Image 1: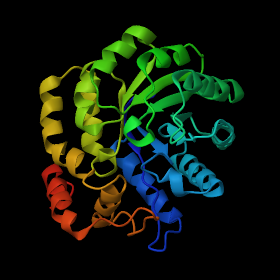
Image 2: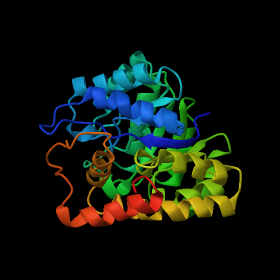
Image 3: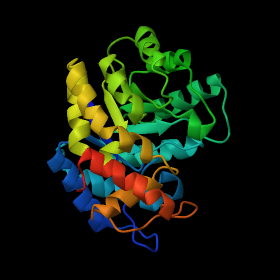
Image 4: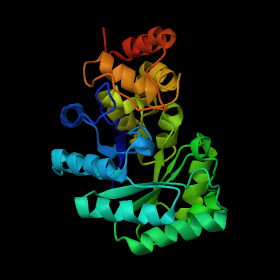
Length: 292
């Protein structure tokens, strides 16, 4: 059971865009010390779209090695090619990932039947727990609850990251898939309510910057403590909003650089956070207590 606050970890880079693996090691130790319950390596926030396959696998390998079994490592291995998805998922299994996170194929806009066949092909090809990832705001492809239910019948499909922000889908997927199917929020702003409704956790951008508070938020919501969860979420509300003031992971990487945890490195076509956004992100960080 993988539950709680799962950080969708950034991939640290030097100012020239090269991988900064020493900063990655330090960042992982920061998360482990602050109570993060799990780590996603090379998801959307990890700039998976601009890492080549060798780099992608290197980040997974190092993350698994550095974590050393202390929390689960989920490898982002989704692509818009089924063959590439299978190859990356197979590599992640060999590298020791606990599970894989598979975004819906982006840009080519498959049908619901195409989504089902895609996920079935990956699951049948690689024997590792797999988590679906539905984020239509980025992929132009919305996997409907009925399709999720079909895919959930495949034994090693264990859950879904639902990033639509539509809370009504929590109960709908629960009804269709049963209580053993894991539900993760992919939307920080609605994660508190998602978990209070029975979700198992959040795969979070905010957790990069405020891992301790996100861990405490998920723990409170999972035990049904609405008052405590609400109080924590109020402190995090600014981060939930301002970490998306420009495209993720632009603001979160800037915030982590402000905290001294990573260098100021990102890859084109993404650019460093615009100067006019600095004050808003900095104010949200102060509200959460991660800087003074």
